[in-house]
View (cartoon, rainbow, N blue to C red):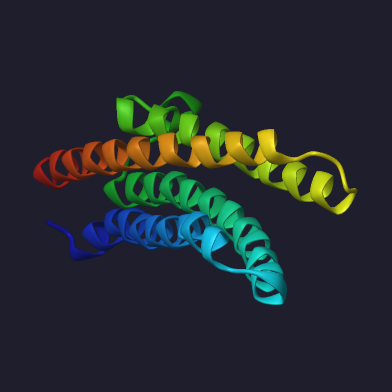
Length: 159
């Protein structure tokens, strides 16, 4: 078992765990929003928006890291890689791409709620949908992470 190859394979799951932690922290806004008032609430709301932007970029980076890890591990193993080899061949990989689509929609909803609020328009329905989608995504993230753990065990077992 090549230690460099194992390290490369572990980069994506370690980065993903950090992003999951950030996602969980970001969801704390739902509780805080009910408790805070005035300037403190406005300040925390702005922080939530900034962190949401950062989290969206981190999700894209983690998915890119997965593809990069696949390329580098194939190169170190002496494999010839084609386009088909980069396409996910397992549910975890396809789930990650689905997660990116959901995260994009979550990001769009958050931006839409923020802009409607700033314009003085009704934004409660958009905000509610944004929160409900984050709840669904949390469940899907847990399933995705578990499947990723199983897939990682399979990959390391094949080394």
